[in-house]
Structure formats: C-alpha cells, structure tokens
Image 1: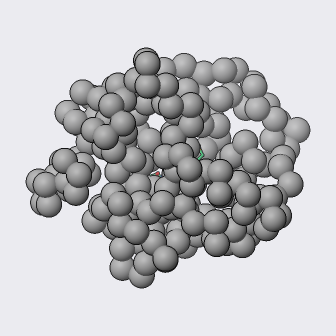
Image 2: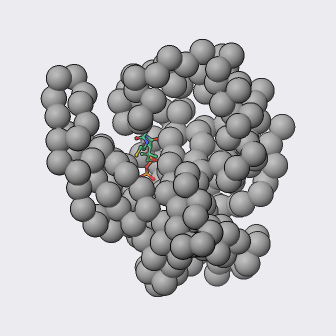
Image 3: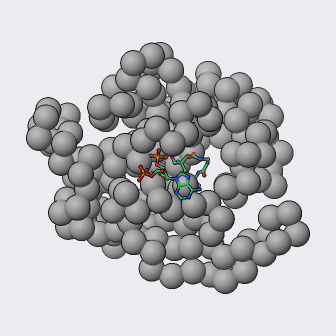
Length: 193
Ligand SMILES: CC(C)(COP(=O)(O)OP(=O)(O)OC[C@H]1O[C@@H](n2cnc3c(N)ncnc32)[C@H](O)[C@@H]1OP(=O)(O)O)[C@@H](O)C(=O)NCCC(=O)NCCS
C-alpha cells in the first residue's frame, strides 16, 4: 500500500514500506544498479534489507511510485539532515531499469527538493555522484544542481580509480531554474505549498 505524500506528474513519493524488502533486495543485488552506489560492496539479503527499510522509513526517505500503475520503481531520501545549518544530502535510485531515462529520476528528485526547501526548511542540499555516472549527473543538472568540486581517484570500480563528484543547490536557484517544479506548481499549486 502506498500513500500519495508528494505528487508529481509522472510519479509520487510515498513513505517506505518494509514489505517491499524482496523487491529492494533484487535491485540491490543487481550490479548494473549498485555500481553507482556505496552499497556495491555490501551483502544484501531480504532479512537485513527489511531491517534497513524499517530504519529508513522513520526518516525522510520515500518510495518512488509510478502515477499510472502505482508500481514501486525506486527510492529517494535525505541523509545527514542538519536543521541547525539547514543542510542535507540526497540519495536516489530507480531500481526498475525499464524506467531509466524517462524523466522519473529527475522528477522524483525535484519533488524531494521542493519538500526539503518548503517543509524541512533546508537552504543547501548536496549530493555525491561517481564520475562515470553520466546519466545521474545530467539528471541532477536538469534538477538544478551544480558541480562544486571533486575528490580525485577516491572510488575503486573494476580495478579502475574514479573521481567522486560533489554537487549542490541553493533554495533560490531551485525556484529560479527548475522547469519541472514550475510546471507542477503552475498546474496544481503544489500539493503542500
Ligand atoms: C540516476 C537515476 C536516478 C536517473 O534517473 P532517470 O529517471 O534514469 O533519469 P532521467 O530520465 O530523469 O534523466 C536522465 C538524463 O540523462 C541523460 N543521459 C542518459 N544517459 C546519458 C549518458 N550516458 N551521458 C549523458 N547524459 C545521459 C538523459 O538523456 C536525460 O537527460 P535529458 O532529459 O536532458 O535528455 C537512475 O538512472 C538510476 O537510479 N540509476 C541507477 C542508480 C544510480 O545511478 N543512482 C544515483 C547514484 S548517485
């Protein structure tokens, strides 16, 4: 069962449900997906994933659900929320690969950012991405993130060393430049604006 907490035109964000552990376990054992994540080197089984989902569901982490089919396609959320400094980091993955490159990731991230700036009072939101992950970098740029630096040769994948790219976005940049949120807000007024 999913709940329409934050609604976009393609997808909505719902609280996470630990009954989805099997689906997440399948995705997090797919190296095409995890090569892009810190979980690449982790052992994930249904039991520890269920415990992880229960933990994640208590914080601002959300399942990404397709509007048309109510199907679970991935998750996104905040790590290291710091209310004193109004900062946080985001993480996202679309586990259902049929949904890659169709705008779902960018929209889900946009919904999460809008919620972060308006409801969680954030000012600066950051993320880390691996230099070979061109799709993610483009999606983040489309959501309004800027590259602010990199940690050189800090990631090992297949015996090769890659840079870790740091990106961030400020509240005012998001509302000035993000076309998706402008369309959503113009169309329906934003579901929690
Ligand atoms: C990264 C991810 C969240 C992006 O979501 P998505 O729904 O696939 O992405 P979108 O369709 O919203 O946007 C992808 C953009 O990258 C572009 N793109 C795709 N492959 C690309 C490539 N090899 N080089 C450059 N740009 C590329 C697309 O054309 C699109 O840009 P456009 O809309 O301007 O044409 C998703 O692919 C995913 O979860 N991947 C696996 C896990 C992962 O990488 N997570 C992020 C870890 S930091």
